[in-house]
Image (tube, one colour):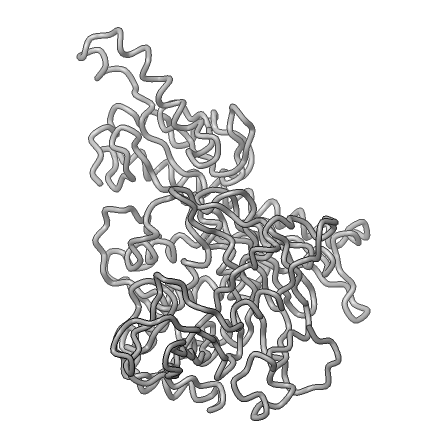
Length: 535
């Protein structure tokens, strides 16, 4: 939006010596010393944390307004207002009086000058840090930060994702998907697409809620983000361009409030699928399908007629064209419903991209693996609860075509086709009255050899190697509620496990991973080889 308060609020020199030392994205709040989501006031250059950390940036603005209430209106307009601040990570500008992001500048272009100065500080800090790390690599004292792989010493090359303001839900999903090799490689090998031209070509854009650019491609920005990860050229990448596209095409995720990682994953996969189906930026559907054929015919999940997913508002008519999304994540469920009065059986096939599993009620007080009161809940318990025969309650009466009325019935799910990547979502959030509570139960899950054969409709038609899955990534929710807390992810890459916590990436071990309270589990089908470990 066009902000009218810039002239009275942007008062600092672009090269102000008042700025703290170091990288702007890691500056600390002057009150609580947190380095998460730092914002700099463009009136006095003081640094405070954002409203979703401890809110000291907003408090700084509010405190500055108190003395002004004793002055006349004309005096208020002459005194600096402390209303405008800049995000030290994404360099977006925000006005507290307008309560929105700002796209305009002062007549002297001070906002852009401050932005460029912060970018230079960030680049200088990164260059200095890279130089320091290079010197450390040459020093034998770095042994503790290196890893021995096959007898040779290798440095960690993983890249974190900067938190743009409660975007940990997005970062955890992106890091998980980037470690599903077949899925990630497909996007990284797509040709680059230049969406901007003319005056904006080659320029970095600063997106706000008010911008009206419709020339966006989710596939392209997703490709760019995946390419930036695992290159080892930077410690953290800022996915702001991808987040802007998410704002444009997924209105539910606009703003900076905490979101549900599973819901975001479903919308992301769904929109990637739709864009790939229709072609993007001149790439025809036939070209996409031809490229998909390299995944082999057995990978394809040809969904004809109505394509359904578990995400909201996605029941729609499609021509059933497969994309890399459905080829890798797509499976098929058989839903059997039996009338308890006349015995009529109804069968329906439902495509799925993930399975949402309830945590059985008898385990919901079991919060840790070592807690002694009762057995530990396992992933098998959740899968069994999903596929067991269930009698539908009074609110879900089945319309029996033979009885010509709604009757009591039973329901059972079978898996008719397993996907290449099995995504399992544990239902940890439940509505009770007006609150959405979290089920904090620890669920035991295997790292290797998850055997899905007993849940198949026709297990005899599947070879044993096609029913075994190995864990590729885990998304974890830390905290008590869906609208709060924090998301991180664990993922395996080239035989090593990493913990992804926004911009911080650390090596970890299998013992740490199996103790995590999983929210979303990504299992990859084991290639045809001997394996003895089973769930």
